[in-house]
Image (cartoon, rainbow, N blue to C red; front, side):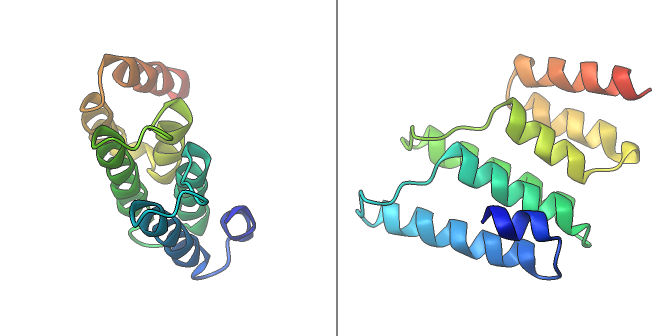
Length: 123
């Protein structure tokens, strides 16, 4: 997944996401030999950020929400954190900073404060 994320090749983000989906599905189906991690999710989000493709920011956001939903449903091996949200932010341009604030505020005051600091640092 990391090689795909760094490649920036057309279609690499979608391929990385398929790998992630396969890992998650296999783990949910009871295969304890394979477990998704925070790094796996962050790598996939990074692949979308590096793709620069249309819809990449929306897809990165959706993956962070999926990660959060899986975590809240009992998958405690991973959860979104600062790196996750920084990766999502990287996929949005500055004009979308208000939307990112809304998204991150859904994840609690800690993430909202991180966004405010980021916005101030780039203003």
